[in-house]
Length: 336
Image (cartoon, rainbow, N blue to C red; front, side, top):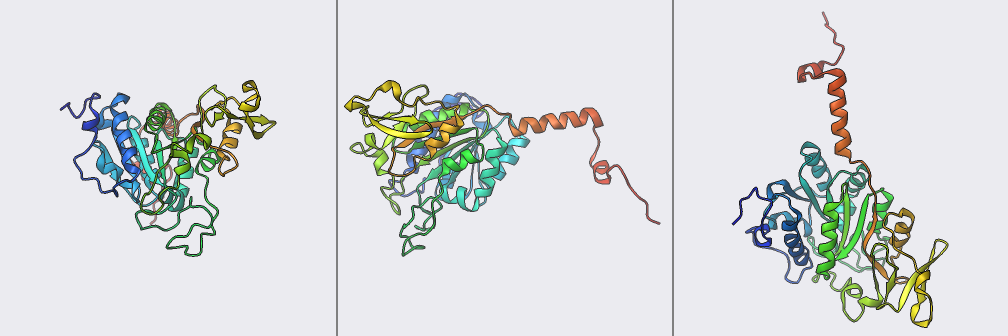
């Protein structure tokens, strides 16, 4: 066994000794396995890694990682993680949440975390259902979804998590899926390298309450015609290279390359282009294939760095003091 404070450890040592209590066949197992595989390669000491979750099936995640962690309050993981990162900026923080925890009761916290750009990673497990509470429709469930809480079909228009993240000015926005381990590992590695808030939506199958929700994107017989793998500087192609996407102004169009359309006319992926990233995020129905990969990234100052700079400036200009002086303020009165 390696020392606990060593940056060198194995995937086996990244796993805790706790019994995993997810349903057999749950997509969470794959996500956990890929995280335990990737973590040792990041060059970070285990004592400097923290997983913080809210409430839900996904939020059991910290128990299964042999690092520091906190199973916090429903929807409030972003707030807890923000406080921890500000108090100790050197930590590697991972927020684990789900479509219910992160986009319903925790939607407000998530939105403000993204706009502040605190240097941490948000992994949103999206199974389009409430799993822990036994199968109610969630903020990402499709219209018409029949569940225990919507027996006649849900009337709610579903959230588009990536469009929401882009609208909140997130500086790193990506999507991956539990059934593609290699792709998932690559996105986790890229998320860790980003300086700022990384938002990663992970399509995760709930085989008990919403089995097959993402079958079009994971089944070998279907996925080639239903997904686009985003690669920096490469054209948007799918269906084993037979089809592609081009832009007519800002309007995307599917073209048939096998019928003679030119590869040179296709949309070239640029993750630094916010406008095109938003267009990609709207590939959210059956009209276009679903994109997977890094949609958008930008370099922007992190909240905690700016806050620390303000504290240093205040100390330099006003000097250091104690709590009593702070409570009294600059003016005080004596009442006779």
